[in-house]
Image 1 (cartoon, rainbow, N blue to C red):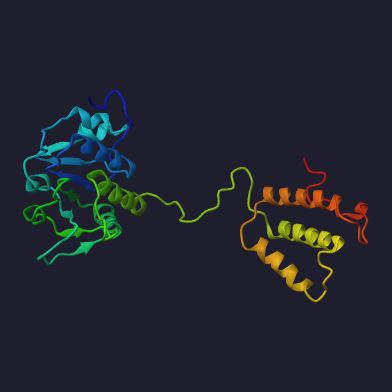
Image 2 (cartoon, rainbow, N blue to C red; image 1 turned 135 degrees about the vertical axis):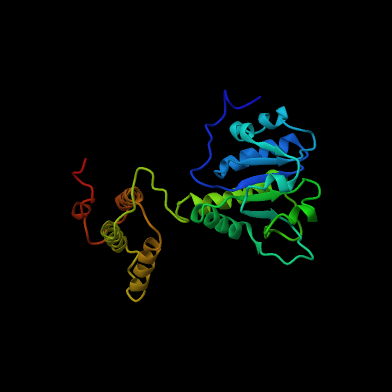
Length: 275
């Protein structure tokens, strides 16, 4: 039932990281799915407050999808106060806070603050998640110093327990660990073409269009050439794509009607003679 003989080799991140506290969780499947979500976001510490059906529950390990070690290390507590007694800061997820004056953060704002608390100040923090059916009670939230709300569609803000944990875990991972640029171009085995390589292709394309008569309308020719240049300059064309486009122009030029420049005077391809 434990993860000692299987599952990912999960372990806590160096230093402090947020503790996930499930308050009166009702279903073993949700606890296991929560562990899976925590593993996705680099979280490890899980505490359970008065789980309805007791603990451990074999079904939780079954649905954790390799996150067994998080469940192996989970601890059980009778009350919220006991679960957070060793923490310096406590956050609580709450969809509709009422009649309370307290700081409120989005999941992203909470994650950024948790990074400062855990990594910047080396303080211990916890995030409370309430029971699946009704969420946290007022007495549970009284143990927290900050509330967390997710800005979702107001017409349908229903999340299951693991989904709620996954959102926070994702924001934590992005704020604390991940440095993936928000925008990048996957080039695989090729590379982005240089402006010189692109200029060589555009020069050849323009010459072929002149040769086939496409640019015979002299008043419109400058604008047409500019439009073609803007089209290719707008994105990051790769070297392999330029090779393909050169091949397209070559095949088109073979069937053109010769208009002044014979085929033997075609400019050499930029990779001619290269291995």
